[in-house]
Image (cartoon, rainbow, N blue to C red):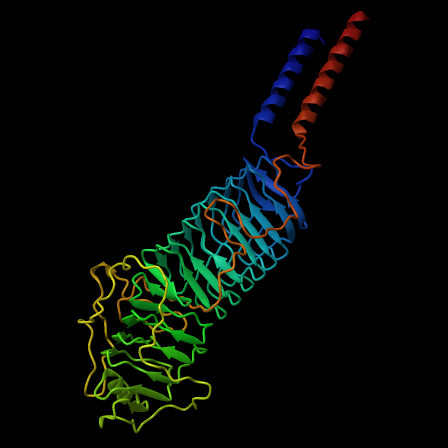
Length: 497
């Protein structure tokens, strides 16, 4: 065969090999042979678990890529920009995670159900913690969140039963529904001045919560004695369920719907002399057995699941009408001859351990005050119905909600399940109690990360041993080159003979 012909054939074979190399194909990594990676996207992991290092050229982790796998640690390189929905969901053996600052997008439920996850360092450059991100991470006790977070999605930390304290990062403006629901060990939460919206059930089921603290200067919320108020302190919004004795701030005019809902441990409640309204469901399910209602109160809504032994008040007052219509024992403080005693008392529990409440108890709160949330209710309560001398006080007391309330009048109470008919600010329903906010797992406004994170792994963009990839196409080209050289060598030998 002519040598020139052989050379042409060899050139054609080489061209075909190069064309094959240029076609799209999947890479198989020696150290990550159980990962499917295409175009920089890690779509699946089929390994046996243990410690995993994601290759440094991966830019995206696909939805459910590691879901349910027995991985114990995972190193996410700085090349990763996005993490899909449920990417690590139900990885029950995963103990700690660091999300690098390169991540700008995260789906929902990324770590949901990671029951063994104990610490999280979120350095990601995302604007929000998506819904259900850490839901049911029962062992999670340490959380460090970056300063760029502006919102916490619904159910983001729900069911994190080992989380004992939480400082919401400065800059967060909204906290979604059930964001911290059923965090049964949560005893204290600090809300920054930037937060202007909280979901109605954001703190529902937090059975150990005793303190809600609001940062000074918040335009919507304030706190006093561990309880949540509107910014002007005229409306009590929520009493943490972990408290046992509550002295309402002296300037408070309204006890909002759900304020003491489910507070079965509260046996002592002191109401201020200037109080004008107790909304429907405000005392539902609370443990108060003996209460004194000031003469200034002109409107009391219906209260389900509450059975006081006695209500003290004044003759011909809203307190007397409420007691009469509800079948509660009423005792007059002024010796009047009106409905001094109800003949159909429904009280079935003795007042063991309960404490009578004094009128006008002052609690000079130091909580911050600024503007009222979305238009606070008129303290005169001109729009609400006053006491009904016929015995029934109207349960539809809407109160004079301010012009800014645009739809916030209805607020689900969380634990009791009742709905407020009154205009309350933002309609929050947080439950909580006394104590001071712990700094564990919190993020300071200075930009430093606080809280402890696991040191079991470090981020490294350099591929680990065994991560070097060898393309099979190289072997093909090398083989063709050798074959071509053989053809040329044989051809020259034949020409000599």
